[in-house]
Amino acid sequence: MGNVVRLQSLLERRANTTTSSSADSARYTCQDCGRTVEPIQIQMLGQVRWVRAVCPCRWERDAAEEAKRREAERQTKIDRLFNLADLGPRFAECTFETWVERKGSERCHELALIYAQSFDEHVKRGDGLLLMGEPGNGKSHLAAAIVNTLVRNGRSCIFRSVPALLKKLQETYREGSRVTESEVLAVLQDADLLVLDDLGAEKVTEWAESTLYFIVDERYRWKKPLVVTTNCDLEVLEERIGTRTIDRLLEMCVLVENRASSYRRERAKARLGVRRA
Image (tube, rainbow, N blue to C red; front, side, top):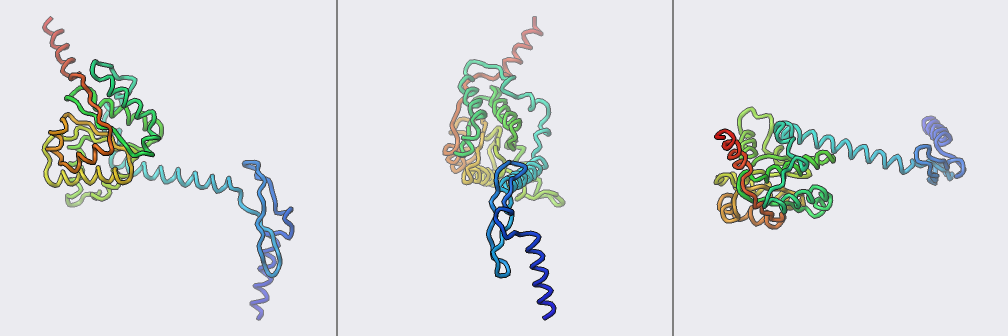
């Protein structure tokens, strides 16, 4: 019985220090946002009490901090496996500002720039771009420019050539690998934007075809934007990566053809001309 009395006394003292019998005394003005915070009415020990409520701005601040923490954690996972810095300084130099307009590339450049500038809308729709054209005409530059623009705006992006990506996944099968295949695939699904560069560079194995389909399909199902570059036309690309993957790409991506000739070849010819002169 003594324990019950002491517990009741403790509860009464607790009630007197954290609650109030008056709504007015429990009402307060938040020093952070300036709004008036109304108290909460409760029943305690047979009495009506008023409890100070937490200001909504506190919940909003806590939610924002939690979202920021989760985003930082997500970015850390992405950087651990696909740090853009690993792509070297040439990648960082691929921006819309350094783009050199050439005949046949105007439409591709325009759509890539619009895509980067209106990325929030593409996130809602989960759509992307499929950039096609002959080798060396700037498709990868434009894809990298999209990534560099989005990264500056705080978006998480992954840019990898398909051969390098498949090799990275294969390396997870080695004994002693510190990264699992599922970890890599999870990061590929989670990034705000995934760029698959040089898709169809070579005829893939059955494993590679299945893996590529899984990656593309996961992005599709979760409405995650995807940008793809390829040197192949649709017929050759289908032959190299399979019908299922092509169908998914055409369903989620706008097909954009870069009609410009190879910039690398033009520069090589120009250098050759200078040497001959």
